[in-house]
Amino acid sequence: MVINFGAGPAKLPRDVLLEVQKELVDYGNSGMSVMEMSHRGKTYMKLHQDTVDLARKILQVPDNYEVLLMQGGGTGLFAAVAMNLINRSGSADYLVTGSWSAKAAKEAEKYGKVNRVVPKPEKYVRVPAAQQWKLDPNASYLYYCDNETIEGVEFDFVPETNGVPLVVDMSSNIMSRPVDIKKFGVIFACAQKNIGPSGITLVIVRKDLISTEYRLPMTPTILDFSILAKDNSINNTPPTFVIYVMGRVFAWIERQGGLQKMYQDSLTKSSLIYDVIASSKNFYYCPVESNVRSRMNIPFRVGGPTGSDALEQEFLKGAEALGMQQLKGHRSVGGIRASLYNAVTIEETKALQKYMLEFLTRNS
Image (tube, rainbow, N blue to C red):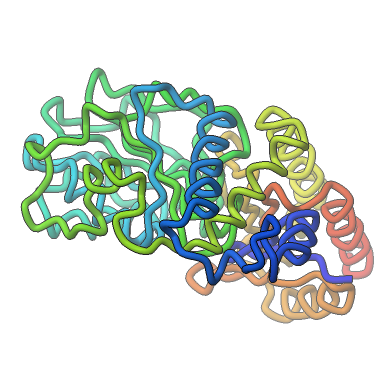
């Protein structure tokens, strides 16, 4: 049996995969696969709308927000956010707490002035206190990443902006806990972690921010919020099969008990691993400050704070022998990383916990 702890593309719920397998060649008695039917036909149009409606229902999206399904992944949205919003004032605030928010800030610099509200740290292991932020009251928006997939830093609060629109990248923790949508101007999340296979990005935009006043004239059609909203994300051919699978994942989340159940399970799973780290007397070491340790992505070193290459290679080899895949840390930080997205079960997490304890005993 394989247990997939990959950071993305990540594990999909097995029930969803079996459902997709069953419908692969004949969706809804149409005689066709979703992959081969017209994106403007009645069957697909209903599937598409059902997916959007389920996202609205699960996340409790208010009526004054648009739900868009966009291509280009998180990287595409780094540009789309700036192109659609930065012209409100010509500048934007970026709260950089990890690699992905740093990439977003760098991309936004192509389209306007970027104010990094905190100095760059030596390592991304914390969220600086709000009192240290240097916010611009005239900023077009404040941007942050709610969960940094690489470094394992997750916000434990929603930033206060005093009226400046708040933009958040929730790619790696969307639908893992309840969210008050009303606090945000834009929420986006690429799918390949918690809500489907790669190839689509869920975008939630407050309607008053969709304006030709704010949008840069150079904004390409495929990244234009107003065009996507007007055409229900079907201005061009969308990745129909990916959207179909995403809809099946949304239905699975609803069947499991919704966001509150996802949240409780995420706390249980992450605690199983963090408890081993805490009790290991620094044999396992997580550099992230405890109050902002991610529930989704847990990076740690084996053999002490700086890690031991030999022990980490042995750890990975032993894990793979037990069917545990994709535990190697991101190349930029090294070490080990366990990603515990919604589809990873408590039982699978317990298997990793057991292995970590056994490895600790053998090497103590």
